[in-house]
Image (cartoon, rainbow, N blue to C red; front, side, top):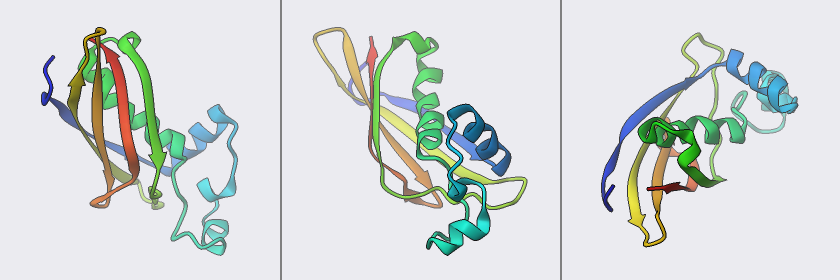
Length: 132
């Protein structure tokens, strides 16, 4: 593992069905994640994905690359833009890329991610720390 190494890109589709499943698992039943009329009433363009769901699917680019999710030490991000999930079988396409930002002397490395939906970045400063 070297600074600058690129991780294989990942594309993930988030559907309305996944939103309902995630809501049940996370006990987050905020209607902006499942009720189109409510989401629009509060100024959103449509139903949006849970921020933590977006973060979770983004982390897959790291864990898939590592081959061992136990090597993931830390993962953080800021929610900067919503992922709008249309009521279609295809849902929303989230594109994730990553590269090794730094290999440290303590046996860890920082992985910097870029997470996009509809060509725009949706997570601010998404970074993972992994065991080398």
